[in-house]
Image (cartoon, rainbow over all chains, first blue to last red; front, top):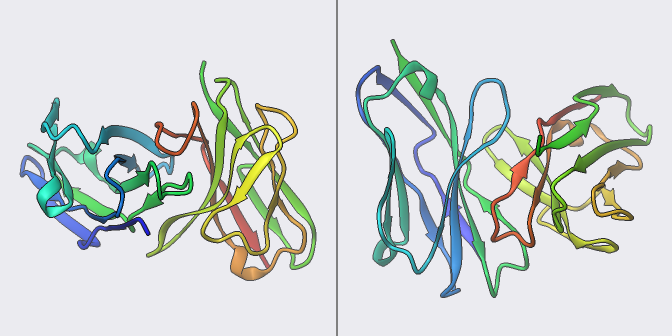
Length: 116
Length: 113
């Protein structure tokens, strides 16, 4: 069964520090998709990235970057030079193509607190 | 504007009083889904629908019903709510399946007394 683990529950950083959020997943499928979502204090869920299992290139979008390591089943997310607006809960999620039964499995989330 | 809407946004009710949370999307998406979010548990999938008249259980379907009579609407029905259904509920939609990017509604905060 597809499973996502986000071990760090809450992470506090001082503004301008970098923060890395770990996401480890379990899957028996060879084809799957990984996602990151952001949930700011206002509560909505904002899509950040979608990555398929065959694309192992790291991705950078502004201050955000993602490191996909298939060998360790990890899809980690780094915020560079954090800002107060980055304070949010971040969720990693996984959907398998063949065995996922059309479901999306979320991790429990990382609460990031950026201290000014 | 492409969006997923949910109503109501906030609801306080009592045990056993049937309620419906509506969800509508204007993106012509085939896949729609309901999630509940609880502290420390992340988001868990309740039900999903691959298309009109096609629905299936997610990970936590007990106590909930859904229907998909039209492509744009996917209401969540609690026929006899209980306090353990107090939660934050999200509706989401995507183009075809769970492997496509899902776009979420604003959430419905439900309290069952």
